[in-house]
Amino acid sequence: MSASVINIEAGRLSSATWLASPNFNERPKGMSIDTIVIHNISLPPDDFGGLDSNGLHYVKALFTNQLDWNAHSYFKTIEGAEVSAHLLIERNGAVTQFVSFDKRAWHAGKSSYLGRPECNDYSIGIELEGSDFQAFTDEQYTVLADIIAAIYHAYPKTRRHLTGHSDIAPGRKTDPGEYFDWVRLRETINQNSKR
Ligand SMILES: [Zn+2]
Image 1 (cartoon, rainbow, N blue to C red):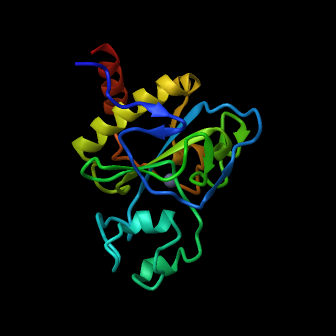
Image 2 (cartoon, helix red, strand yellow; image 1 turned 135 degrees about the horizontal axis):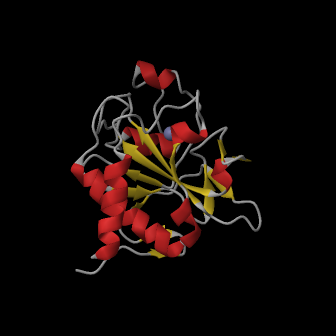
Image 3 (tube, rainbow, N blue to C red; image 1 turned 90 degrees about the vertical axis):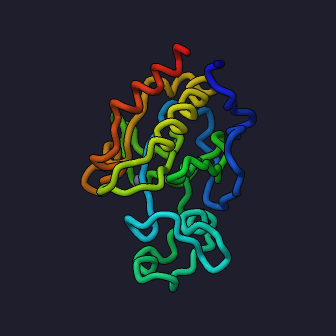
């Protein structure tokens, strides 16, 4: 079996469903993409797969500024948020891309990695539908590892910097959380690179 049928062209992942977010801007001129940031998100927290009245997944609604803040009491607490990520991986492994990898998605917020501020400038943000209190699915690990391999190929400098939101915004963010198995992810990436 070939390493992966996934590829990246013009900043887009071939295996993802494209759903454009308005929440992005240009990366600073000359800035290279060298970091991957893993997150978890669920709306409301710990609840997976919720759909709005139009049948749109709540997280996809949030990232495209379509979330109805009145649909749940939790949504009120984030009312007005303008956020995005490059990718969302749902519990069943379905992948949606909201922002070209070549553009700056708004996933990290105030952050710093290895002394460099503004992680959004130089990173790719990947959201797993999940929470700090539940295990992630087998499908998510498999798909995430395949995607990271494709990112490594397209943006080789990212090979050195795979991190989590809690590591770049300590004290402010806790995701992807203790249930996220970094060892499993790294082993799956390594196995894939050998097949
Ligand atoms: Zn996060």
